[in-house]
Image (cartoon, rainbow, N blue to C red; front, side):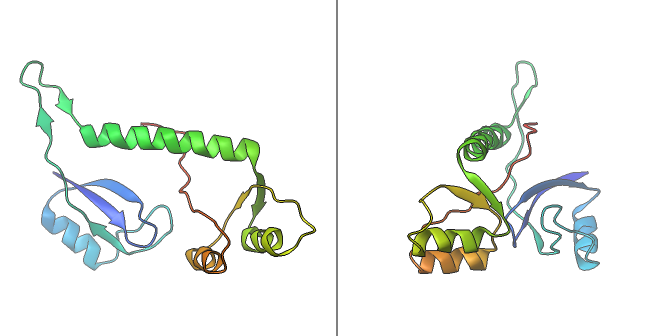
Length: 142
């Protein structure tokens, strides 16, 4: 068995997956059986893997990358909770609401969050509307 770290080139989600051999990965990739669970894209590629390191004392696996990922997920989850408590959710109307706040003096300036495509975000930034994209993290830290 071999563990590969895969990444979706569309949404940049990282996935760990076990394969019976390196040839098995290639076979599944060729048949379009590798699909991103987040965005349903078939643009999933292998990335570089770091080797596993073992402590000689008690043979416990040290996985610094896993610890870093957990810390990043924890921090992102804290940001998400802050945003949900302090900003207005506008759903699919994010681009419209962002433009309304930016261009119309009628609406009060307030923090909003919602859903927008990468293209929408690019257009908003080109118009001088400062928006950021963060990935949602499920409330599972393991």
